[in-house]
Image 1: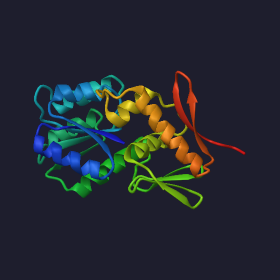
Image 2: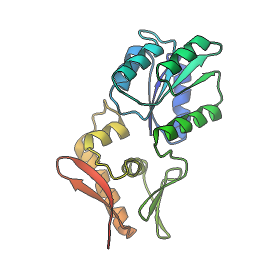
Image 3: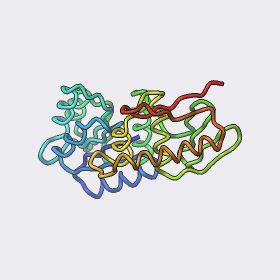
Image 4: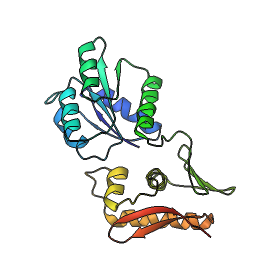
Amino acid sequence: MRILIVEDEVHLAEALTQILKKHHYSVDAVHDGQSGLDNALSGIYDLLLLDIMLPEMDGITILKTLRAKGISTPVILLTAKGEISDKIAGLDYGADDYVAKPFSTEELLARIRAALRRKGEVVPEDALKFGDIELHTGNLKLTCKGKELKLILKESELLELLMTRKQAVTSKEQIIEKLWGFDSEVEHNNVEVYISFLRKKLTFLHAAVRISTLRGVGYVLEEVTS
């Protein structure tokens, strides 16, 4: 899952970034409203943590703009204690939830999980399952019929993306944006390398799951029927 933090308190944004990465989320952080809107409009994020009081453009304006453009990415507002009117305005304009500063790590993580569940995403807490394979995102292990392999981080992130897409085709551009960020200089052949690594590991496990290529379109995870 990829989360965008829009928070002008740099130290808080950095702390949130480290906490979320520790819990296996991919994270980008920006510190002003205009950058936040530009990033959010890319559509690559699964959730936004959005401060209300921001330079250049406030969080409520960002939220209104996103919803007006039909972008339904879940938004959790970060509010100062006592900003009741801002909380009400945010919820009225389409925010999914809010947390008041200062907040506990456990509360924020719980609200993130709840927002992602409401969106219908598979939240990476336990094993993800597809066909006869299980991906354990916490320890990067891939298991199948009692056998297991250790993946490297990017392999795990790529397989998680394909599994949570639920047999939808995923383009190389989507993979690059999700795994490396929309402004990354990573090229298509990097994606091909990691797809090759995963295919070899699925073959080694004798998994009844394969990564199929739709030329010119992308990749899709499929169950192999005997």
